Image (cartoon, rainbow, N blue to C red; front, top):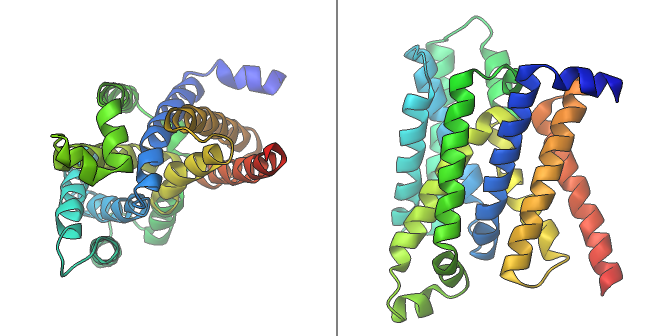
Length: 276
């Protein structure tokens, strides 16, 4: 406990905790809708696209990679939504096509035009997370806070509409709701969360932040509102616990957070069985 108190006196640790709380909260809120719509794999696909964009930004030596990564990932989310409605290219095939192509292109580009001498180390850190979460600059923290608050505000404001398109998109359209626009908003917000979460857990582990808390909450609650609130609580607790454990014991940040999410799912699964 004394060691933990000492760490919290350092600004970079406090910044990392704030970012972890905001990202995990946003991921949990959107994750419930994605899981219920059977579209949770979009997180994995967009994370691969973000990796490809990061590779391009690194080769071009951008001082702020977010300038390229964020718009490219948002555009990919829009393309996935549009392509997924094509009768010739179904949703899962579209995700596989765009995500794998982006990752292959990014890794090839990093090897052909390396931005540093340690290409393998850079790739591994990007895919599985690194200690960059505890070396965030003030501008990174501010950007995360602004985008996270916008995401939360949009979710709260459009809660009823998101609920409608999540459970019965056809009925929502029939009653006059513009389901396609709300699906687009969900996809864009998901892309923003993916970009923000890259520093936290890495490209390959991002989908865990979207899926695990939602599935854990579904073991204990049967209502959409209950699952959403519970998923947010579980996600924040796991993110903060995993981050602090990684700081104290020197374990990989991303893997530790995902391991906490997986452990929470097992606990909720057992609690759900006991409840029944």
